[in-house]
Each structure stands twice: as C-alpha cells, then as structure tokens.
Image 1 (cartoon, rainbow, N blue to C red):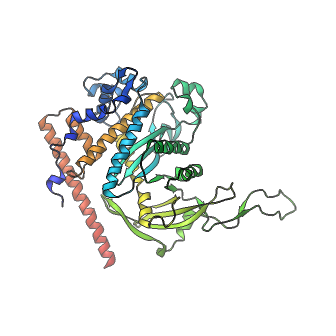
Image 2: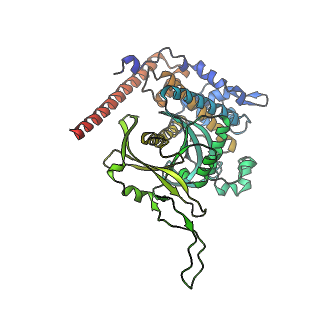
Image 3: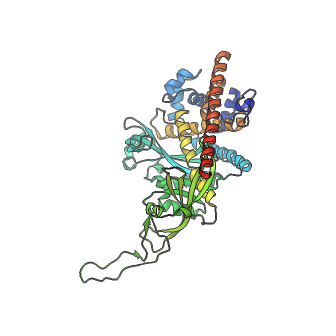
Length: 475
C-alpha cells in the first residue's frame, strides 16, 4: 500500500516552479532567433497559453486574454511569419525525448518503440494548408480536416511525439497557386502518401541519432509493402499491424506462368502460385486452443493486461515479383468473452523474441493514442487559428515542447505521486505560473488528492476482481 506521502506530495519540487519552466524554454533560445530578433519571450508566453487555455480555446485571441504581457499581433507574427527555426527545435526535442526515455530504459530494462500513426484536425473553410474532405479518424468518417502523420517514442507508459509531417492531398499538390498562397516550400509541393512520409521521418530520425528498439504502426503502414521494404533496407526491426483481410501463404510457394490449355482466349501472362493463400481472419478461425499462449503483458488500471498470443512464419506476395517475403505473423487476442483480435507482421525471426515480447510490442501502440488525447485535450494541438505551412509546423513544435516538459515533470515526481496524470501536471503548472492564492491552491490540491485516492481504490478493486476471477476458474 502506498503511504499518504507517496500518494500525494508536491512540496519542494523545484521543477514545478515558473522559473524552471521559463529556463527550460529558454534553453532552446537559439531556435527562436530570426535574424537578429529573439522570439524567446513570445515562445514562453505561447507555451504558457497552451497550458492555461481550456480545450477548444487555445487560440491567439484567448492567449492574449489569459497570459499577462502578451499581444495578439506578436503571436500572429511569431506563428505565421517569423523565420525562427522550427526544424532545429524539433531536432533538439527529438534528442531530448530520446535521451529521457533512454534513461528510463536503463532503469526499467524495457525496449523503446518508434510508433507511426496519423491524427486529424477538423477545420472549416478551404484556406488552411492541407485542408480537404478526407477521412478524419477523430470522428470516424470523411470530413473537412487536416491530417498529420506523427511519430511517437514510447517506453512503458511514457510516450511523446518526436516528429510530424502534414499530409498534402493531391487537390493541393496539383494546385501550385494554392500551395504558393500558403507558402509551402517547393520541395514539399510534390505528392507523397502517408507511408512515404513515415519513411522520410524514420530516415530523418535515424540521422538525428534518435534511439529506439523497434518500429510500430497500424494497418495502413503495416500493409504498405514499400514502407516495410524500406525499413528492411535500413536494417531496422518492426512489428506493424495489418488488416484482417491480408492474404498470406502458410508455406513458401513457387511461381510460374500457367501453360495455355484452351485453344481460345489469351495466353496466360500472370504468375500463379503453386499453393493457395488464405486470409488472416480465416487462419485465425482455424487455430486450436493448444496453439495459443496466454501471456501477462503489463499493469493497467483495470488489472494486468493478459493476451493470448500466436506466432508463426508466413509468406506474403505483392502479385508482381517472382519472390515472396517471409514475415513473422503475430496474432493477439484479449482474455475476454468477446476477444479483441489484432494481426501484426514483423521482419524479426520467429524465435528472435518470445511470445510475451512480441505481444508487448503490439500492445504498446495504445500509448500513442494517449499522446494525441493529451496533446489535443490539454495542449490545444487542434485549436490553432492559422493557415500557412509555417504556422502548422511552428504550432506543432511548441505543442511538442510543452508535452515533453510535462512528461519530464511526471517522471521527476513519479516517486512521490505515482498516479500523477498529464492533466494533473498541467493543472499544477498553471497554479505555479499564475500564482493562484493559497486558499484556492489548497482547494485544488485537495480535489486532486481525493481524485487520486479514488483512482487508487478503483485500481485495487479491479486487481482484486481479476484475482478472484482467476481463483474461481482454478477451483
């Protein structure tokens, strides 16, 4: 059981002071210079605005109201027109994130993942860079939005965005006037698919010196042959989700062009395999109970995450080349009456990692969704009001900077406050920055303490339920 001190204690933590926040942002001063002008003070105010403004209101007008000594026009110039070095800032942040999680890895001995995913930002009108009617995952349907492809580094429960690309639909790349109006650099005006953008980021981050143990992604990226082959060429290990309708061979096939057997019709020209392929969901249905391994993966608020795991060698074919590619297939399903099933391919050897290790790689993609939730709900990643290419990247860089600072505070305080959430940390920072009176501060801290105690009781109850369920099954 955690002591009261361990459950909730913040006194004396220098890292939660406003001077520490300003000092941390100022450490990137060189990136905020544009010619001879230093934008560091505006950057500090912008970050404070991201922390202070509630969800849906993290725009420059609201920041001017909430942050003392700030001005709308300064924000507008800083975000949309100033030539400060967002690429340099993102590189510095990538190294900082990498080093921070690498230090955690040395303590917990858990591998660090490099996870690719996309996220959409709903927008009105047609002027914002990259905006189009396209699939918006945030609402599960086609709508007017911008879509970014992101990479997050993940180690155990800690995750932070490390790189990003704005996806430009063909309706943009085929319209030079539109691209020039939003000041998209010439080298970015050519169309690239989301997997192509992902491969660009992988190469860039390897060049930056970002440290990771495996690459992950959802079915869009795992299904893409060129991306997976590109990762193979880079000599990097991946475990990527694929769709249930993916077809595989369960033993290695050979290919030939069939001999023409009929007098009429065209001569066959397409290669044909000598074995029948199968859909992954069909393969799954034919597995026996003995082929599954139940593995305990990690702690969650609802008890231990337990997954049934199956792994085997499969061969995939793009229907064009004369060769197939061998992959390790990993299928996981939750330990529930109605299990959730996931299919993944890896370029690792089948015996290179255990059932538990492969399942851990698959399960870690969950934390990337949490990074998006935190960035959008707590830091206004989707709430900006600017249209240019530069403003997209400026805003995202500052959200990444703020998110990393919060994660550092969570890590610094986890010994004393193990249940400290991203949101809790943001609220504590607001109290420090805006010097909330002592009565109000005590009230908010009391609320947080009660919330943590309730969360702790719920976690313990869930673990007890899980223990009793196992006991009943074995008795």
